[in-house]
Length: 70
Image (tube, rainbow, N blue to C red; front, top):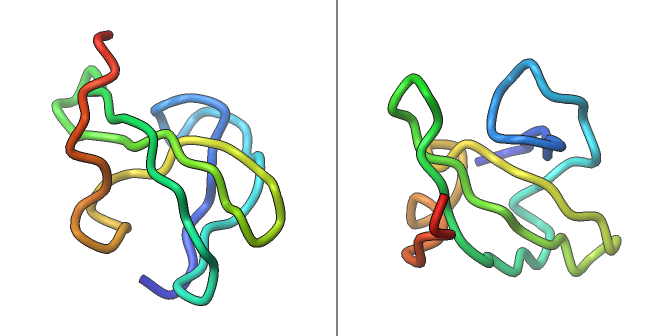
């Protein structure tokens, strides 16, 4: 991953809340499954304090291994 948009929800149609970059420290919380079957991880970018959802295919180790429950 070079850089990915952090979004307010688990869809590319949701607003951008920040950017996750491979130089940032990312704290994965949990993942959810979108209506199209893709998985998205909710994370905190510890480098700048922003939070948001990122599609797992764009994250190292394919994102979180903990299901959010929704």
